[in-house]
Length: 187
Image (cartoon, rainbow, N blue to C red; front, side, top):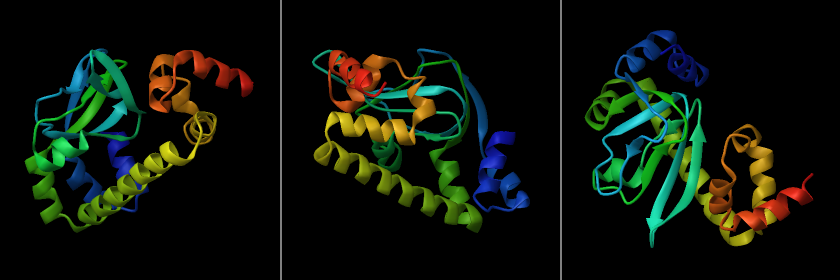
């Protein structure tokens, strides 16, 4: 829980308020290959990744299409399913043994209404999520695969070292073979 409390403290939340916020979260281990969210089920939890790596993907015609990978010190949820409390259309799977701090949807709603510091943090987090999603969408439309790879190298260098190449290729919307050519150009 220390990492979670430090995360909130780094966002300007007082130690006292951080303790109140983190008390609403529960600890859970998820093994490599296990699912945090499954297609067709409602995402009931928001989680902070204390340690781990997670793949977001869709199944289309029996193939996995990876859309996002996230790791340590970030939040984890199926956005549409969680906020609308409707069945998920995506899967979220652990790519490594992982440790999470989780909060149930109902407890999150309560925390937003009772803790001003958390509510302010939460609004900022949602704004950052919206900006990140818009940047990703814009990059997919306006940048070449090489340029998208360069952005990932600049912004997610540590995470890139952990991501299996087939997932990275899927995120970029290219084949693993094309990714190999791109990577060779960056060496």
